[in-house]
Structures are given as C-alpha cells and as structure tokens.
Image (cartoon, rainbow over all chains, first blue to last red; front, side, top):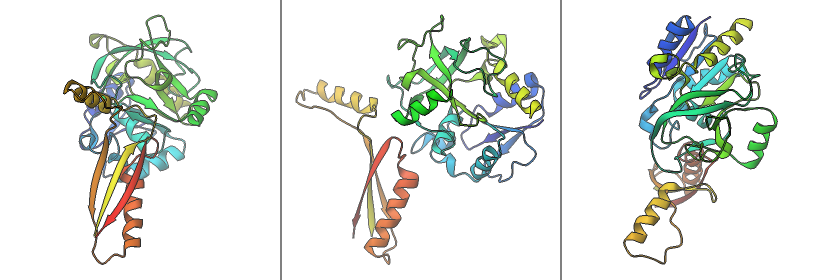
Length: 231
Length: 81
C-alpha cells in the first residue's frame, strides 16, 4: 500500500498529511510535486490543505491546471482513492471531481478552531470504522469553507448518501449555531458517486494525536487503509 | 485588441464582502444604497491580428474555463479595439 501527498506551490499541510500516513497509518508515503504526470504505484493520493497558488483568482482555481491534476482525474476515474482536505477540497471542486463550490465564510473571518462533525454516512471508504451519527472533534482552518451548490446537486448528494460530514453541536445536532461558515445544510464533507473521492474542509490529519487536542481523525485514515487493503 | 471580462457572483450567491462594503458605505452617510455586490474585472490583451469574432471566442473560452467558476459566477465579455 502506498500513499502520495500532492504538493502544489503554496501547499502547507502536506507535511501534516505525510506525518500522519507515515507515523500513525504506518504506510509508505511520498510527496508528489504538482509537475508530476504519473501516479502509477499509488493506492491513494491526498490533496492537502494550504494556499495553492496563493489562493489567486479563487481558492483552488489555478491548481486545477497543474500537470498532476490530469493524472489525479485518471486516478479517480480508475476507482483509486483521492482525499482532498481543506484547500484540497476546494481544488477537487474547481477541477470538477466533486460538485459545488466553496465561497467566503459568511462572517468573512478566517476561522481556526476545533468543531464538531457528525458522520452522516458510515458506509463510505473513509468512514467505515465509524458509526453513522458519531460526533468527531476535528479542527477547521479556512476563510473559504462555505459550501454552495444548486438545489438539484444538493438533492442528489442527499439522496445518495454523499454528504459524509455535517457541522454539528456537541450533542450531534446540525444547528445553524454549530455551522461555522454558512455552508449549505451544514455540509463539511462530500464524496463522489463511487465514494472513492472525498473532500472535506476540516483537517483530520491535525486530529491524530492527543497532544493536538483530538484523536478523532485517526478513524478516517484507518477506514481508508481498510478500504485499500480490501481493494 | 483587448477583451474586458467582468465576472460577477450569480444572483442569490451570498457575497459577504459586498455586504461589508455596503455597511462601510452606509457609515459614510450614503443611506439610499440598496445593495452592493463585489465582482472581478480582467483586461486580456489579444493579438491585434485576430478578427473581432476570434477575439470574442478566445476571451469567452478563457472566461468560462479559467476566470469564472460557472457554479457560482456569471461572466460578460466586451471586445474593444
């Protein structure tokens, strides 16, 4: 099993992802520079957080033209795992691998704090080690995490169980008060139709060691590892 | 030849920056402003040898594929000599 962490100019959570895969998941992992065009040999790639291309134009808008993204699209189409975190989620939306878009937080602030996430669907490759309805404490760190999509897209996501995580309160209620950024229907993470591509604004790679305040991110990586192993 | 490209948020897409600007304008004493929406403006210098039709086609493609995100934004292209 081998992981790749894509590195764009301006990525800054690439080392966090690398650290978690090598230390906590215990699997081989490479950094993959955005000029690479071949993802052969990898089972999963992480599109990490950060500020690719300085967030110029729109978050993720320029990264989608990096040479590696054509390979990421083929990789996803082949059913392999593509996991976009924060800026990675924005990039996957811009690249059309996931529907919708992420716009400025409704309060305009860059928000950096732990939030509660409710697992909406435990039957995805990223959540199989969790229970539907479980509440996770995972940090967010973004200014553009306000998920928007049209009604048709929303209905399709909802009906097919593709809303994987919602922002919620400590008791698991997805209230407006618990919505940090104004995202439609408290959406924090979604997957594609086949479930192999996941994008989420919160950072599970920053929630894998107690010293950092939470271990709750580990189950997401464990689920992914299990999915790869079971092929 | 130059293309002017205007990118605006679709109606209904929240524009918190526009709202903040609106609020500041009200603080300045302008009290009859209904709304302010923020957009983006691009000037694309094109090869002078292009016909106006070719220039428009090029600029439209650039606007659609790069400058605007059709999920949340509309665009308008003007060609000027």
